[in-house]
Every structure is written in C-alpha cells, then in structure tokens.
Image (cartoon, rainbow, N blue to C red):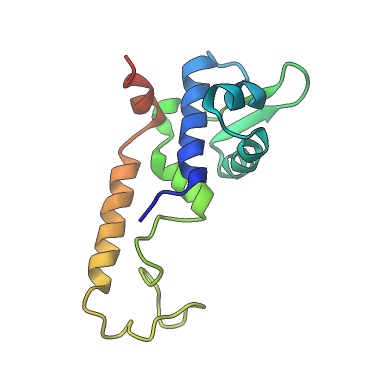
Length: 140
C-alpha cells in the first residue's frame, strides 16, 4: 500500500502555502522551486483542491493560490478525498456492493473483506485527525 504522489505533493504544497503565505496568494512557481514539484503537476493537483474547496486562486501578476479555510480545518483526509475522489481504500473490493460496477466474485463469502473495510475506516479516521496546521507546527 502506498500513498500516491498527488496526495504527498498536495500535502507538501498546502503546508508550504500555510507556512509562507500570511494569507496572501502564493504563485505556483514559488511552491515548485521550494518543494521540487513540477509546476504543471501542482496545477493539476490544485484544480482538484479548488473543486473540493481546499484552495482558491487569484489571477494576474500578484495572483496565486491561497487556502480556502484555516489550516486547522484542512485535514489530510480532505486531501485524500479530493485527489482520490473519495476515501482511501486498502483494497479495491473494500466497500463494494453486489450491484457495483466493479465486483469481486468472493464478496459474499470473503472472510477478510470486513477487516479491509475496518482498516480503511481506521486509516481515514487517522488521516482526518491530522490538520495542515498540525503539520506546520512540527518544524517548530
């Protein structure tokens, strides 16, 4: 199991904005230079964040991205949901129902499926317990 790069880079970019913006928009080029992330990739991630209400943007020479909420209100779980389109799942069959588009032939008698679901719930609860603000305090 691995957390994908959109989640990892997205969290880093949000921390950069939180730590450095003082409420002002930050240009993608500054995030890119400091975090070593392609500007194009940051833009792709931030489009998902804008749709999820995590960031907002201002156009123009003094524009950039800023947090749509206080950093204490943005959770790693929010980042996961924005990039993944929902909660993080340990396995593809976790949460599938009989009428889902993608089904598992063992769903009705799988002895570990409930464990995967519980593990996914606990993992998301953990990620929901960590805010961007919490992460920004760590360097202190």
